[in-house]
Length: 230
Image (cartoon, rainbow, N blue to C red; front, side):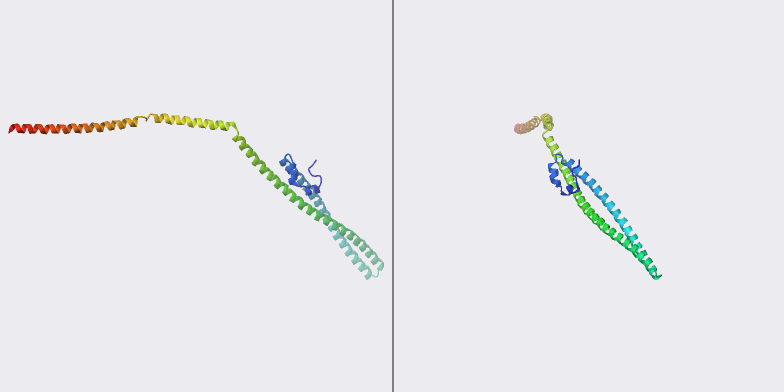
């Protein structure tokens, strides 16, 4: 059983309300669109039949008009030959055709009114169909957005992510330890170098003092020898 039972049901339907009450809005939208499209096909088929009827009536009216013209010419010919009896008969035949034309003209008016109604109905139905399609598109977008949000929330609350972060932290700790191990080989080297430099400076100063003492002692010895020669 369809969602809509008649064309007026579709026209009077509040799509938003139907969607809000539906357990599965996307499915509801799909079914509504399907039934609207089927109804549109039915209305169009009826319109096609009315258009065909209109063409047939117009063709018959044209034939009746030609027939009336023909009987009118025959009546004139009969009068010209002095045969009023034949002229009257021709005019009676013309009158019958005129009556048929009047009936067909009235029928044509009804068909044209039906076509105008079909055109109006199809326009309204098409607008309703576009509304349903737009609503379905909106639902699809909202559904995809909601599914993505749920997936993100599930990922954030998943213990595997915490486990991954924990492993990452352990890896960083291991890297820190490796870097510290490498830096440990440089410990003490800087202090030994500074100590060696300090001892070298002290040695140079001591050598300078010793050299100065030798110079003084050498000068005294030279003076003593010079005094003996005198």
